[in-house]
Image (cartoon, rainbow, N blue to C red; front, side, top):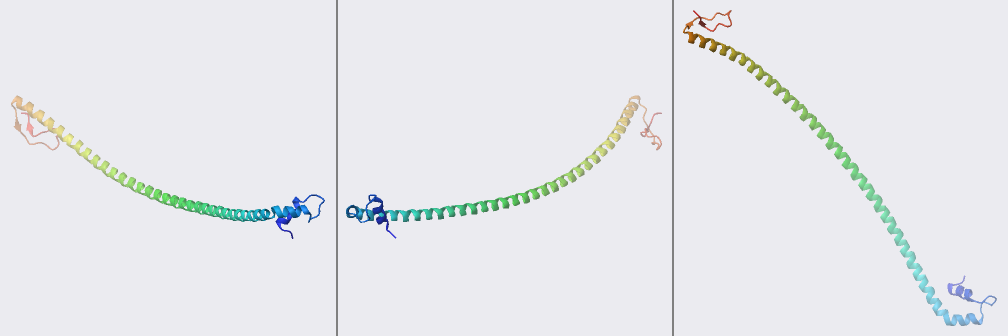
Length: 165
């Protein structure tokens, strides 16, 4: 197994020349320390790059996991809110139906009461008409000067207790 510096020496060797030529030795003497330093630096950069890639992969995995968890929480919150909204809507619908029934009952009571009042007023109106007729008749008799009290007969509804004799 050859090291990277030995591989680099082979790559820089002239074609057809042997592995341990004078040029290789000179090149190794001149650039050997630099090659080893560059090899060390490249390995350090490769190691840092691999560490960064691993770190980046872990971060991506964490972001994906957090995103998944966030989506799950958002879905669960949405589902809970939807359930609460539906419950609230059912409660409000029920209250509205109850309120409507109550108002319908109150309206019916008020309508019945109003009908009774109207009937009473109609009855009073008839009584007022009878009283008006009686007063007109009494006024005419007073004007003529013929007022004699009489007992009203029960079979004559227009009799007013005054006679016309």
